[in-house]
Length: 410
Ligand SMILES: [Zn+2]
Image 1 (cartoon, rainbow, N blue to C red):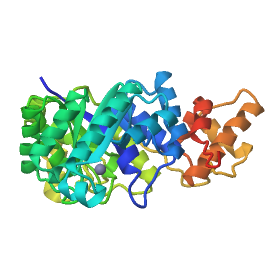
Image 2: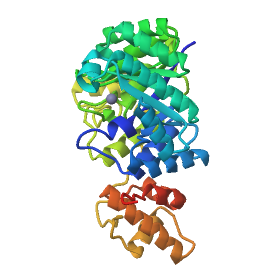
Image 3: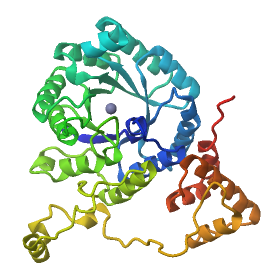
Image 4: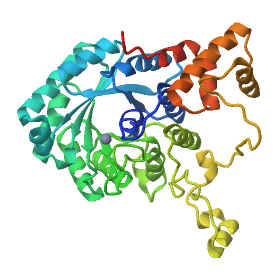
């Protein structure tokens, strides 16, 4: 029986968004939290982008150490042989890739200035090159799939399947689909091509989550596994992508859905509060008050009838309990003196901060070394590090060193 999986693309679509970005340490923390949640795969970055190389290598090392396990770390590149070769040159240990190319007439002629046959050939050549370089799993992305005619999509997905690709990504790049159109198209694809289908939906018309759920239903009804692309807090190009938490809630809690359309692996919902809060802090974007599950108002009741109802029985006005999402724990907020990390921090303040988290160092030298890494992390983040980030650096100093190394002049 086909199932639903999640592929989070915060570290690719989220960070390529205008006005927004994450430090390499912040990207790593997102991977750590996604792993804790049980998300199947993180699209963790751009293997052809030079400033990503050490970050990607460091995260693959964490995977090898068993720290970033069982999550699968996959890189996003264009579906060209040149990109495949560059990816394996810069990140030799990369094993999972998504190869992307435009398929709509608008983009094939209007952007790539190529023919559809060129697009097919480029994709097929890229898939074969990726296999020959040692790829273990490949997804093939049809950019602007929702504005591509179905016959070409079937040809494209079939050619990918024939060359051994594992997944076909249906990209509603402009957020043009609606739940009815995406359901029909994806179901047709699933029935005609025996390949798992990824839903990659954008919110330009406010339907990213709804389209993801409908598309997933189309894939499953057509007999194929569905992989839903999400981002934490819905951060992504323009109006954003399908929000991770809202999409998980939609497929697990909406009317009669989960009984018929199960998840491929369990998701640890109690971790979602932490990842949403961290992404909000790291991106510097407040969580909207009415955001599903994690917004300040998601479990707030003021009006007489609602408050009375929820006090008598929460199920009167709440579909699920806040504690399921990891909410409800008291949070300590310092209202008086505060010592925090910075790029010019000194050892005394640093020992104080770490001491509050019950971290001690074996000698002055070790404290100085970790402090130095924390300073560098602050140069990138330009805001005080979180407790988890500080703990990460103290626990994996060699990995942190790699993450924090940027050498453009080499
Ligand atoms: Zn996108």
